[in-house]
Image (cartoon, rainbow, N blue to C red; front, side, top):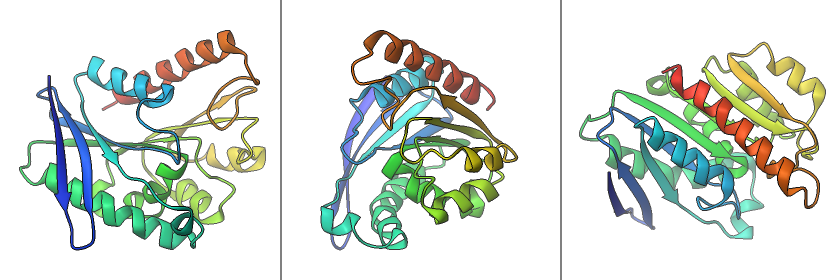
Length: 214
């Protein structure tokens, strides 16, 4: 396993990312949430699961001010893609990968839904959307109309959860997993450690099944 920390320079910014190589022909691009970074449980164990399946990993290290996050959804997506696209071009330029997976949580699902799911070159990519912002119409409409295979996980105590929307999403190709009593971090209750860990294990089992389908 080879870990490389790299930077990509654009006109306005320097974007850093971590590229962990296992010699795989499949790569997973991960997009963190706002304040929910790659050392948090969902990303930590999702990363471990990718390694277990011999899948290379890209962690893109972005952060945005409140000023950016208060802009329109389209503007937020564009700002994120301005950081994500140069990294993707840098990673994919040598043609070493045959398959791509995209995994995002919350904020990280915005560029997935509004941009990546609509790109022809990624129509066969697997999409893993964790706690997506389904209360935002553009996000919901994009996911429900997507033909991608993959996995969507959300807790029924997440403020973005809506049962009517979930029922509509059941017609999409994504497998839907509702975590009972889980919040936006997929934690159970306020301090229910045992059940939070058990549900995290179940989430990883669902992820394992999803990536095994490649």
